[in-house]
Length: 197
Image (cartoon, rainbow, N blue to C red; front, top):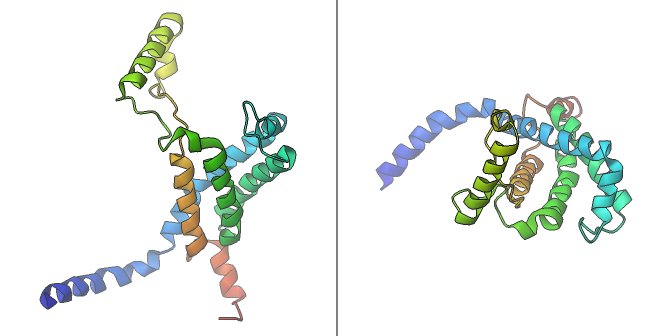
């Protein structure tokens, strides 16, 4: 067993210490993935801010949140400013906190009742029947090939899957920061070292 463990650590120590020079690529990939997600969500909220406020506040068909005007503006601008800061890798850990809060609100106020899956399982009989009916209607009454030339039709389940994925990515950025060599945070920390360290 010691020989096996020794071999494991020998191989490990040859390969993985060399990767430390690339450890900024993981946080960079997370940041660049999240930038368009938050940019689109925030700019769409801002563009239709009156509708966003109404959706945030309406208890019947919306979220029924208190102070909907304040929360709509906070959510929209957190997402837009967050996207810009993530792009630059500036204040990455700090902006991760309000973005995590935004994701928690989305998970529990918007998506929770719909379960896990973001897209309904087309293998389910009920979903397959509904999807088949929708396709038949669209083939009969529209230009189906034009509608589907950019992708297949799906039934949105609107579950927590995507919001949880973004939350996990933000938690990773909260712990790692923007990444070595690839973020403004890294260069600022070199220019202005933390005196507490």
